[in-house]
Amino acid sequence: MKIFIDTADIDEIEEAYSWGILDGITTNPSLIKKAVEKLKNKGKKVDMEEYIKKICSIVEGPVSLEVRGIKAEEMVREGNILYEKFNDINDNIVIKIPVNTAFNENDEQFEGIKAIKELEETGIPTNATLIMAPEQALLAAKAGASYVSPFLGRVDDYIRSVKGIEYSKMDYWDFDASILMENKEREKKAENGYKVVSSVSYSDNGIYSGVHLVESIIRIFDSYSYDTEIIAASVRNARQVRLVAEMGVDIATIPFTVIKEMVSHYKTMEGMKKFTQDVVEEYSKLFE
Ligand code: E4P
Image (cartoon, rainbow, N blue to C red; front, side, top):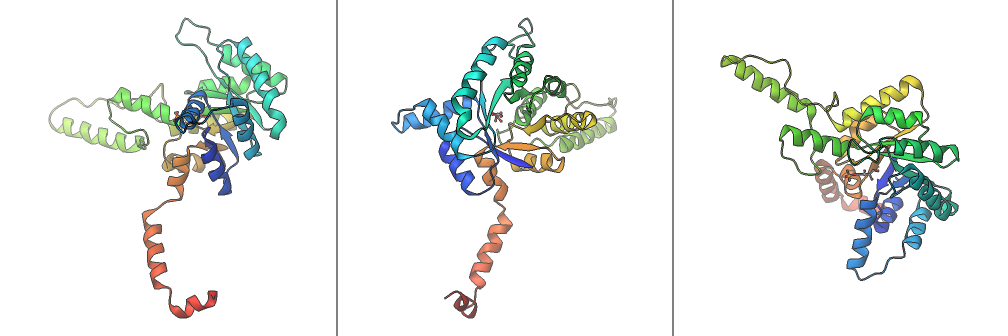
């Protein structure tokens, strides 16, 4: 599995790159805003063109840059601008296109898909972003997208909010445990004379979690041998990374804090303390 870092913060990118684990970078307008605000708070001015050039120069792997338009024509124009400005640096620009740019149901629904098709036809690789359903990934792959980015965390957020579950941003959404608990509740109600209903657990049109979304897309793409690579995105914790890695996802784009969480375990720390304490003088002499 390739690891991309999901950030526009150059300090984070450089540090993760120095660890030797980085295969690419994904950005979006919110991540760029966060990075710009951090620099401004330090009293620094931002030359966006230079800033992005620097990002592209750090890693040889793909760097996703998102368009800001919502019409296919605008997105294709902006995609070309980004590609022309930055692709020469490391030949690694991928244009991020929202799979559907509609703000509501009356808006045009296929602008993203059209933009993906047009950019890919001219040889500009695209990353279909804001994928919340397997069907959207299927359409993006049909249009020729090089990558699709299912948003695990946001799907979990949505399901938990519909179910009225309180959560913090980085909490793992344990769908299996929630089913067990609901079954127990049902059994308890049955004992008390309530009618047992078949299933009370919420799914988003059959998708039970962000991890399940990725599993479904992998299954579809495997069935038809699409070349489109899957980027597990909107990753909130190390456990999600593990689960999508077990499924064989092509790429996970991971925030800096979650990459750090992946390397950490309290028993490893405990073991380190003990090993350090137990070094005898005779052994230490080997290193003199
Ligand atoms: C993906 O490429 C996006 O940049 C990102 O993963 C969104 O993550 P969020 O839902 O944590 O904002």
